[in-house]
Image 1 (cartoon, each protein chain N blue to C red):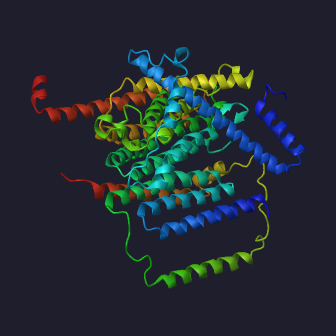
Image 2 (cartoon, rainbow over the protein chains, first blue to last red):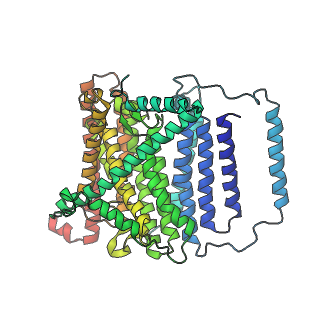
Length: 169
Length: 396
């Protein structure tokens, strides 16, 4: 096993353990903090894949904005942080089945792929992932249209949120 | 390559050779040396932090027409060590009903969010933690951890004042992150890279002269991010006693305090790197890396001094004023400036350096002037509404 594989296994176990804690802990703020830890694990996984930009954006967007928003919402809406109700509903076995099937299906699909056993090739020197990403997001031959559509969608959501929250005098 | 041209590389190679001589695996030796490098950087920063306490106390004393610490040692230089001894031997209390793990984790995360910033700071042309190609965004990502530590401290203390202080601080940090991110993009537009070293290399003309307004907005956002006056409503002593860190005692409080001082110094450093050429000063940085470090520290100290100057001169503003100022004025202005900068950059792409600098400077001045005029007419209208028709009559 290479050092990178060992690091990946540690990070993956850490991420999965944190994700498990998110759904099993009874304290809602603790759940939000475990979610932060899970998102960190995912960011480390991105960094291991040499996707620095995605890793940093993961931290900025998911931890800096979304997780903080979660924590705020929990703190402002709940007085008692403890949840007393049952942690599973009667459909837990269906969820477990779907999870196992997805995992099994993905594993069998990937094991049929020719590159399954290969280690990643080293990046060529001078490889600049951000420039490539930026160019493909703004180039008419690549993804400029989906990118702009997504921006307009987000803007519409923003305007909608302001409209809903706006206090008419 | 001699020690004086690239001290870190030479020292690292020598250490790796020593470890290899002990029969250690090459990869293990490399990792160990990297860890030692991080350890060395953090140690230097923490020692610097001790003296920042002295600097902060001395400067605030001068601003308030006092002498400051002057009893222990020459110029009171030993005073911070006395402070540290006091903090260490102080009783370490945990409030009843506190969430122990989160409560103890918060000061560590707070300090960590500052120290981690130094991973991307180019201290000298050949000395930097990691040559990250997204260095500028890393700044915001580390800020996210700082925000998290404050909300953790505020919530876990089981104290109303701490909670309110935490909420306020997070509201400030989350809002001012937006103009700060927009202003971080201005050096990126000029340099064409998000790499810190590339931004410094491209600064043949300090970006302050290309974008004075951008530098100013970045400084305001940085002060808000630090939670210092005039944005220190998170620790408004008259309302909240001390804010999110109210229940912390001893070295745990010390971590927050030292973290804040180092954070201010670090932002002074980032201000210098992004807008004042970092370690560059008329080619002196090429003479010796040690001179480059000295230049960067002096520039960072000047930035830190400006932050202190603002802190001890301005009054605290209310939270609604703070949010209104950010969302109605600073954020639109930051985005407008970003658009103007990008447009002018595209228009003047082929122009000579002089034309480029003058054009950029004028674009900044015009944008700032229009923004001020709009703000002035808006506040005039608001004031007329509050004061009633009297002022209208007075005009006639």
